[in-house]
Image (tube, rainbow, N blue to C red; front, side, top):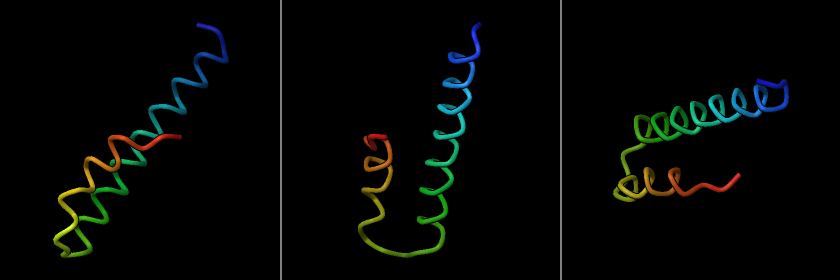
Length: 47
């Protein structure tokens, strides 16, 4: 695997982990009726 592909793969994995962590943190910190839409929002997030 060349270095560019390897770097892109690592960046993608870290980005996915960060997005899931942010979503979980928001849902755990706030009690809001709109939080049901957070998963869909983060699933469709465009970098």
